[in-house]
Image 1 (cartoon, helix red, strand yellow):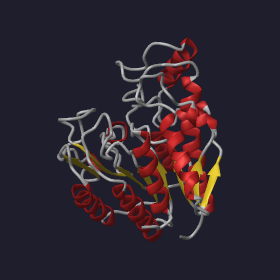
Image 2 (cartoon, helix red, strand yellow):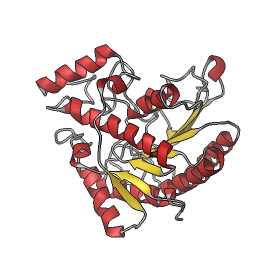
Image 3 (cartoon, one colour):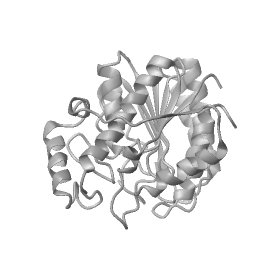
Image 4 (cartoon, helix red, strand yellow):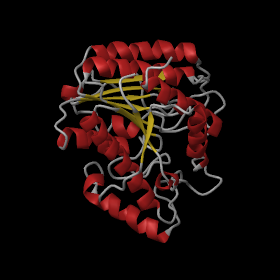
Length: 314
């Protein structure tokens, strides 16, 4: 372990919580923080959330869509998409805090040489012009644009182990050869968003730079480890200056809306290996983002494993 692990924490992140009985609520983060507190990890340093400016959000999202979210946030009801992502009072501000916190942590990683985790981040389904899959603003997409356009980064590696395919990142950068993309997810023929197949490898100059690994329902750690070794080999073949890691916990056995059967060992392994790869290939620069997960105990155990993995603990 070479330094502190920064973890975003504050009531502002808990605001990104849809009205019950929606599966994405504040209890996920609350359970994670409870478990993290109980471990008393001396290397964890908490960082307060930061609200993104409109200028930052529109690095990825269209002005028209951002204005739509602002309006719906004031209305406080209805849907931001086809029915998965409801508006609620203050949803614009809640989503802006997720984006701003991810960008704030990026700057910390770049400036201080630390590793960091935004547990409310990783909202990977939102597209440039629309919401999707519980995701209002795509903080990962904003982060990629920020790194490439504002931070002087040449190439970014994005690794996603959420049970759901990260379509909002994959397709919005599908022809961009500056993004190395690898995604392990439950087969899209059995789970939202129904995408992320083996033959989807990028277009133009980016052909071969997008690795989609769909795995069957009920896959366990063994299948995950096999898939992640393929990700590691893929990363070894490319240059990049920063790693973004979306570590959704909805692949852990017992999640109410997916069919995968990982244990938190999957998250521990992935975080530890990516930290090692980052140390060797890109100056240790890695930022984790929480993503999905709808069983609070699973979320707590998986993300605790991510924090420990980033610190080099087995």
